[in-house]
Length: 217
Image (cartoon, rainbow, N blue to C red; front, side, top):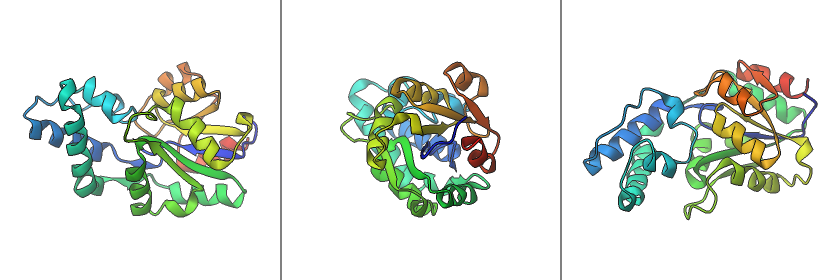
């Protein structure tokens, strides 16, 4: 890989080990609505895609109940679920290295933007980022293909050739491909190397500590 100046980071599974938080919040929403909860043992099925898509697809929530399911999920995540999240080892050190190298950094996540900002604050990440970019409540911006251009604009990047998206799932990799941005996969998250490689990943990092050197290789 060449050197990149603008680095976009997925949040769940790339910076934050949050799968359990997402799992218990989905289960709470389903239980509260009196709906059967799907098997949530495979984190790759629901950590990464937009929440609305998870409720509609994996959870088979009736269309008229999807807004309520999302509301229940978010309220529980904010109050209870989020407490089960942690940073992957070495994340803050990695971000500090990139900042010292003069990189412009953004969180680019399908998580609702105010929630993403709150998670970044709670985890002590906000000070490392120039922008925190997430999905919109009205659904007009929810997939990585929509979010990546939004994040690049927030960073003031006008040359996509100088940007790289870092993530752990094929949702991130596919979105980067659609947005015309290079994708770097991390193998310690919730996706698989094979699925991101199939979507065009050009490199991989096996730990947060490896990311700076892979980016500037």
